[in-house]
Image (tube, rainbow, N blue to C red):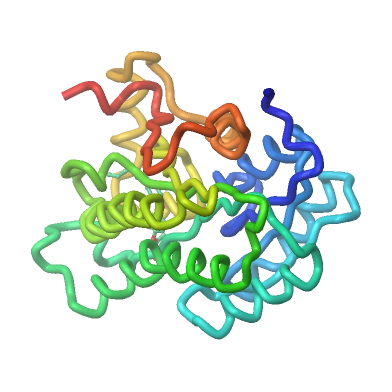
Length: 259
Ligand SMILES: CCCCCCc1ccc(Oc2ccc(Oc3cccc(O)n3)cc2)c(O)c1
Protein backbone atom coordinates (compact mmCIF):
# COMPACT_ATOMS: atom_id res chain seq x y z
CA UNK A 1 0.00 0.00 0.00
CA UNK A 2 1.53 3.35 -1.02
CA UNK A 3 0.94 6.73 -2.64
CA UNK A 4 1.99 5.65 -6.13
CA UNK A 5 -0.50 6.30 -8.94
CA UNK A 6 1.51 4.36 -11.54
CA UNK A 7 -0.71 2.81 -14.21
CA UNK A 8 -3.69 4.94 -13.22
CA UNK A 9 -5.48 7.59 -15.28
CA UNK A 10 -7.08 10.76 -13.90
CA UNK A 11 -9.12 13.59 -15.41
CA UNK A 12 -8.19 17.10 -14.19
CA UNK A 13 -10.94 19.64 -14.96
CA UNK A 14 -10.30 23.37 -14.65
CA UNK A 15 -6.64 24.16 -15.37
CA UNK A 16 -6.58 27.81 -16.55
CA UNK A 17 -2.90 28.71 -16.07
CA UNK A 18 0.23 27.85 -14.11
CA UNK A 19 -1.22 29.35 -10.89
CA UNK A 20 -4.40 27.24 -11.01
CA UNK A 21 -4.97 24.88 -8.09
CA UNK A 22 -5.91 22.32 -10.76
CA UNK A 23 -2.38 22.68 -12.16
CA UNK A 24 -0.92 22.05 -8.68
CA UNK A 25 -3.03 18.89 -8.52
CA UNK A 26 -1.89 17.84 -12.03
CA UNK A 27 1.80 18.25 -11.14
CA UNK A 28 1.46 16.15 -7.97
CA UNK A 29 -0.50 13.43 -9.81
CA UNK A 30 2.13 13.40 -12.58
CA UNK A 31 4.93 13.10 -10.00
CA UNK A 32 3.08 10.12 -8.51
CA UNK A 33 3.13 8.41 -11.92
CA UNK A 34 -0.43 9.05 -13.12
CA UNK A 35 -1.56 9.42 -16.74
CA UNK A 36 -3.52 12.68 -17.08
CA UNK A 37 -6.46 13.88 -19.15
CA UNK A 38 -7.30 17.61 -19.05
CA UNK A 39 -10.56 19.41 -19.76
CA UNK A 40 -11.04 23.16 -20.03
CA UNK A 41 -14.17 25.30 -20.34
CA UNK A 42 -13.57 28.41 -22.41
CA UNK A 43 -12.05 28.11 -25.92
CA UNK A 44 -9.36 30.70 -25.09
CA UNK A 45 -7.99 28.50 -22.27
CA UNK A 46 -6.98 25.70 -24.67
CA UNK A 47 -3.68 27.38 -25.65
CA UNK A 48 -2.41 27.86 -22.09
CA UNK A 49 -3.43 24.33 -21.09
CA UNK A 50 -1.55 22.89 -24.09
CA UNK A 51 1.57 24.92 -23.26
CA UNK A 52 1.46 23.81 -19.61
CA UNK A 53 0.92 20.14 -20.47
CA UNK A 54 4.00 20.21 -22.73
CA UNK A 55 6.10 21.04 -19.67
CA UNK A 56 5.13 17.69 -18.15
CA UNK A 57 7.27 15.89 -20.77
CA UNK A 58 4.80 13.08 -21.32
CA UNK A 59 3.15 12.22 -24.62
CA UNK A 60 0.06 10.43 -23.40
CA UNK A 61 -1.96 13.36 -22.08
CA UNK A 62 -5.30 14.17 -23.68
CA UNK A 63 -6.82 17.70 -23.71
CA UNK A 64 -10.54 18.17 -24.35
CA UNK A 65 -13.06 21.00 -24.11
CA UNK A 66 -15.92 20.55 -21.65
CA UNK A 67 -18.39 23.35 -20.89
CA UNK A 68 -19.95 21.94 -17.73
CA UNK A 69 -23.18 23.92 -18.24
CA UNK A 70 -23.92 21.64 -21.23
CA UNK A 71 -25.08 18.06 -20.62
CA UNK A 72 -24.31 17.37 -24.28
CA UNK A 73 -20.68 18.55 -23.94
CA UNK A 74 -20.26 16.50 -20.75
CA UNK A 75 -21.58 13.42 -22.61
CA UNK A 76 -19.37 14.06 -25.67
CA UNK A 77 -16.26 14.76 -23.58
CA UNK A 78 -16.54 11.69 -21.35
CA UNK A 79 -17.56 9.45 -24.28
CA UNK A 80 -14.31 10.51 -26.00
CA UNK A 81 -12.40 9.68 -22.80
CA UNK A 82 -14.11 6.26 -22.73
CA UNK A 83 -13.08 5.68 -26.36
CA UNK A 84 -9.49 6.77 -25.77
CA UNK A 85 -8.62 5.08 -22.47
CA UNK A 86 -11.58 2.83 -21.50
CA UNK A 87 -11.15 3.25 -17.75
CA UNK A 88 -10.24 6.15 -15.48
CA UNK A 89 -9.44 6.02 -11.75
CA UNK A 90 -10.47 9.53 -10.68
CA UNK A 91 -11.61 13.02 -11.56
CA UNK A 92 -10.39 16.30 -10.02
CA UNK A 93 -13.33 18.71 -10.41
CA UNK A 94 -11.77 22.20 -10.10
CA UNK A 95 -14.56 24.18 -11.75
CA UNK A 96 -16.51 27.11 -10.32
CA UNK A 97 -17.93 30.45 -11.40
CA UNK A 98 -20.10 33.28 -10.09
CA UNK A 99 -20.78 36.75 -11.47
CA UNK A 100 -18.13 39.13 -10.11
CA UNK A 101 -20.83 41.67 -9.15
CA UNK A 102 -22.24 39.11 -6.72
CA UNK A 103 -18.89 38.53 -5.01
CA UNK A 104 -18.87 41.85 -3.20
CA UNK A 105 -21.32 43.87 -1.13
CA UNK A 106 -24.34 42.23 0.50
CA UNK A 107 -25.36 38.65 -0.21
CA UNK A 108 -28.96 39.88 0.16
CA UNK A 109 -28.70 41.51 -3.27
CA UNK A 110 -28.14 38.17 -5.01
CA UNK A 111 -30.18 37.75 -8.21
CA UNK A 112 -32.08 34.59 -9.22
CA UNK A 113 -29.96 34.40 -12.39
CA UNK A 114 -26.67 34.90 -10.51
CA UNK A 115 -27.63 32.37 -7.85
CA UNK A 116 -28.55 29.70 -10.42
CA UNK A 117 -25.44 30.36 -12.51
CA UNK A 118 -23.16 29.84 -9.50
CA UNK A 119 -25.05 26.67 -8.51
CA UNK A 120 -25.06 25.36 -12.08
CA UNK A 121 -21.32 25.68 -12.72
CA UNK A 122 -19.92 25.31 -9.20
CA UNK A 123 -22.18 22.64 -7.69
CA UNK A 124 -24.53 20.83 -10.09
CA UNK A 125 -21.69 20.14 -12.55
CA UNK A 126 -20.14 17.59 -10.14
CA UNK A 127 -23.40 15.59 -10.04
CA UNK A 128 -23.80 15.82 -13.83
CA UNK A 129 -20.26 14.50 -14.35
CA UNK A 130 -20.72 11.72 -11.77
CA UNK A 131 -23.95 10.64 -13.53
CA UNK A 132 -22.16 10.48 -16.91
CA UNK A 133 -19.23 8.52 -15.43
CA UNK A 134 -21.68 6.01 -13.93
CA UNK A 135 -23.69 5.70 -17.18
CA UNK A 136 -20.52 5.22 -19.28
CA UNK A 137 -19.08 2.80 -16.69
CA UNK A 138 -15.86 4.83 -16.86
CA UNK A 139 -14.67 3.88 -13.36
CA UNK A 140 -15.18 0.12 -13.72
CA UNK A 141 -12.20 -0.58 -11.43
CA UNK A 142 -13.56 1.79 -8.77
CA UNK A 143 -12.29 5.33 -8.37
CA UNK A 144 -12.36 8.64 -6.62
CA UNK A 145 -13.84 12.10 -7.18
CA UNK A 146 -12.23 15.18 -5.67
CA UNK A 147 -13.71 18.67 -5.79
CA UNK A 148 -12.55 22.00 -4.38
CA UNK A 149 -14.41 23.92 -1.71
CA UNK A 150 -13.73 26.86 0.58
CA UNK A 151 -14.46 27.77 4.22
CA UNK A 152 -17.02 30.31 2.96
CA UNK A 153 -19.29 27.34 2.24
CA UNK A 154 -19.36 26.47 5.96
CA UNK A 155 -19.52 29.95 7.49
CA UNK A 156 -19.88 33.56 6.40
CA UNK A 157 -16.75 35.00 4.81
CA UNK A 158 -17.16 38.62 3.67
CA UNK A 159 -17.61 39.00 -0.10
CA UNK A 160 -17.81 35.27 -0.78
CA UNK A 161 -21.62 35.57 -0.83
CA UNK A 162 -23.27 33.61 -3.65
CA UNK A 163 -20.20 31.36 -4.07
CA UNK A 164 -20.46 30.43 -0.38
CA UNK A 165 -24.00 29.17 -0.93
CA UNK A 166 -22.81 27.27 -4.02
CA UNK A 167 -19.97 25.64 -2.05
CA UNK A 168 -22.42 24.64 0.72
CA UNK A 169 -24.47 22.96 -2.01
CA UNK A 170 -21.32 21.32 -3.43
CA UNK A 171 -20.26 19.99 -0.01
CA UNK A 172 -23.72 18.49 0.57
CA UNK A 173 -23.60 16.96 -2.95
CA UNK A 174 -20.27 15.32 -2.03
CA UNK A 175 -22.00 13.47 0.81
CA UNK A 176 -25.03 12.36 -1.25
CA UNK A 177 -22.82 11.26 -4.18
CA UNK A 178 -20.55 9.40 -1.74
CA UNK A 179 -23.63 7.61 -0.40
CA UNK A 180 -24.76 6.50 -3.88
CA UNK A 181 -21.36 5.61 -5.37
CA UNK A 182 -19.63 3.86 -2.46
CA UNK A 183 -21.21 0.50 -3.37
CA UNK A 184 -19.40 0.70 -6.75
CA UNK A 185 -16.04 1.36 -5.08
CA UNK A 186 -16.17 5.04 -6.01
CA UNK A 187 -15.28 7.60 -3.34
CA UNK A 188 -16.24 11.30 -3.33
CA UNK A 189 -14.38 13.90 -1.22
CA UNK A 190 -13.64 17.62 -1.22
CA UNK A 191 -10.55 19.60 -0.39
CA UNK A 192 -11.34 22.89 1.33
CA UNK A 193 -8.32 24.94 0.25
CA UNK A 194 -7.14 28.09 1.96
CA UNK A 195 -7.05 31.25 -0.20
CA UNK A 196 -4.51 31.04 -3.05
CA UNK A 197 -3.82 33.86 -5.54
CA UNK A 198 -5.30 32.39 -8.71
CA UNK A 199 -7.10 33.85 -11.74
CA UNK A 200 -10.39 32.96 -10.03
CA UNK A 201 -9.39 34.77 -6.85
CA UNK A 202 -9.31 37.99 -8.88
CA UNK A 203 -13.12 37.78 -8.92
CA UNK A 204 -13.39 38.10 -5.13
CA UNK A 205 -13.30 41.62 -3.71
CA UNK A 206 -10.69 42.48 -1.11
CA UNK A 207 -8.96 39.11 -1.51
CA UNK A 208 -5.70 40.50 -0.12
CA UNK A 209 -7.31 41.13 3.27
CA UNK A 210 -8.08 37.43 3.84
CA UNK A 211 -4.61 36.39 2.59
CA UNK A 212 -3.03 38.67 5.22
CA UNK A 213 -5.46 37.40 7.90
CA UNK A 214 -4.46 33.77 7.14
CA UNK A 215 -0.74 34.61 7.29
CA UNK A 216 -1.23 36.32 10.68
CA UNK A 217 -3.86 34.10 12.36
CA UNK A 218 -3.62 30.54 10.93
CA UNK A 219 -1.90 27.97 13.17
CA UNK A 220 0.84 27.48 10.55
CA UNK A 221 1.12 31.28 10.06
CA UNK A 222 1.29 30.98 6.28
CA UNK A 223 -0.89 30.70 3.21
CA UNK A 224 -1.79 27.49 1.36
CA UNK A 225 0.06 26.50 -1.82
CA UNK A 226 -1.23 24.60 -4.89
CA UNK A 227 1.47 21.98 -4.18
CA UNK A 228 0.00 21.27 -0.73
CA UNK A 229 -3.46 20.83 -2.28
CA UNK A 230 -1.94 18.65 -5.03
CA UNK A 231 -0.28 16.35 -2.49
CA UNK A 232 -3.56 15.94 -0.57
CA UNK A 233 -5.20 15.07 -3.90
CA UNK A 234 -2.61 12.30 -4.43
CA UNK A 235 -3.52 10.95 -0.99
CA UNK A 236 -7.27 11.09 -1.73
CA UNK A 237 -6.77 9.42 -5.14
CA UNK A 238 -4.48 6.72 -3.68
CA UNK A 239 -5.33 3.53 -1.77
CA UNK A 240 -3.98 5.19 1.36
CA UNK A 241 -7.34 7.00 1.68
CA UNK A 242 -9.44 3.93 0.77
CA UNK A 243 -11.46 4.30 4.01
CA UNK A 244 -12.37 7.95 3.38
CA UNK A 245 -15.46 9.10 1.48
CA UNK A 246 -17.97 11.93 1.90
CA UNK A 247 -15.22 13.91 3.64
CA UNK A 248 -14.14 17.55 3.40
CA UNK A 249 -10.44 17.91 4.18
CA UNK A 250 -9.18 21.41 5.02
CA UNK A 251 -5.81 22.18 3.47
CA UNK A 252 -5.70 25.71 4.86
CA UNK A 253 -2.82 25.96 7.38
CA UNK A 254 -5.46 25.19 10.02
CA UNK A 255 -7.25 28.53 9.58
CA UNK A 256 -10.72 26.91 9.87
CA UNK A 257 -10.12 26.11 13.56
CA UNK A 258 -9.62 29.81 14.40
CA UNK A 259 -12.79 31.76 15.36
C1 LIG B 1 -13.63 36.09 1.26
C2 LIG B 1 -13.15 35.05 0.35
C3 LIG B 1 -11.67 35.23 0.10
C4 LIG B 1 -11.03 33.88 -0.18
C5 LIG B 1 -11.59 33.29 -1.47
C6 LIG B 1 -10.84 31.99 -1.80
C7 LIG B 1 -11.35 31.54 -3.13
C8 LIG B 1 -10.73 31.98 -4.30
C9 LIG B 1 -11.21 31.55 -5.54
C10 LIG B 1 -12.31 30.71 -5.59
O1 LIG B 1 -12.82 30.26 -6.81
C11 LIG B 1 -13.64 31.10 -7.52
C12 LIG B 1 -14.02 30.68 -8.79
C13 LIG B 1 -14.78 31.51 -9.60
C14 LIG B 1 -15.18 32.73 -9.11
O2 LIG B 1 -15.96 33.54 -9.92
C15 LIG B 1 -15.29 34.45 -10.69
C16 LIG B 1 -13.91 34.53 -10.77
C17 LIG B 1 -13.33 35.50 -11.58
C18 LIG B 1 -14.14 36.34 -12.31
C19 LIG B 1 -15.52 36.20 -12.19
O3 LIG B 1 -16.33 37.02 -12.89
N1 LIG B 1 -16.07 35.28 -11.39
C20 LIG B 1 -14.84 33.13 -7.83
C21 LIG B 1 -14.05 32.31 -7.02
C22 LIG B 1 -12.92 30.27 -4.42
O4 LIG B 1 -13.99 29.45 -4.54
C23 LIG B 1 -12.44 30.67 -3.19
